[in-house]
Length: 110
Image (spheres, rainbow, N blue to C red):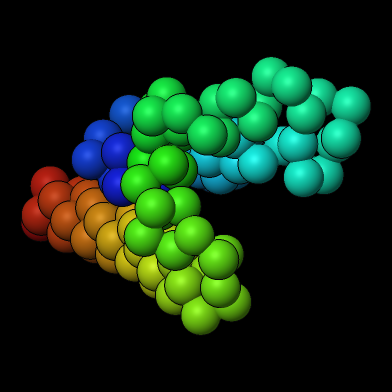
């Protein structure tokens, strides 16, 4: 979701909310682990190829069936890195637009 939001800079007003919801969406197939009441429905999603609709969840589970801490750490680190990169890009764009606007207003005064 972070990458999708980054593709449309300035057009998405609630980018941080979408990034958070994207993370929650990715965890839907694992909901049975934290909410045993819903084991039936979410475990079916988790064990099917339909899990790939949730940000390639099933593919990741095939790659790392033991849910190792190493793969989890790498995935979280990548997510944090992409999020920070997107935020820095937004910050640099805003700074560039501000400096351009200031130069433009100074040129008009001259």
